[in-house]
Image 1 (cartoon, one colour):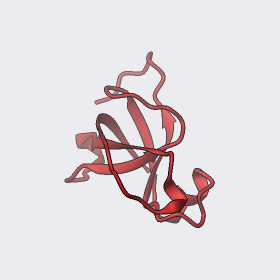
Image 2 (cartoon, one colour):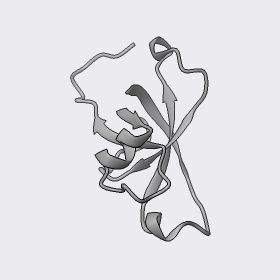
Image 3 (spheres, helix red, strand yellow):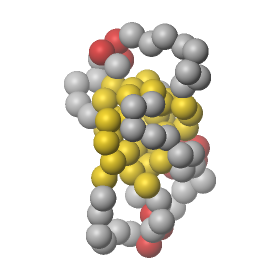
Image 4 (cartoon, helix red, strand yellow):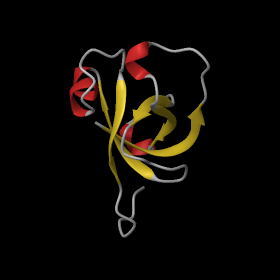
Length: 87
């Protein structure tokens, strides 16, 4: 699991039938996560740009968003409560 900030979205014109109608967001991991690059994650819970989110990767991402047969490697599975201070 990775905690990061949503910094953008991805717009695409062609895609696999299994992911039609879903939104993809660009995640900047927190420095403390020690992940060196941004992540593109499917967003089935409605995160917005500027929010801090919890991201599952690999098979946990597919199971966590009920997309076991979709080509998904990362999924937003939680949104941070506004009261928390993350560094």
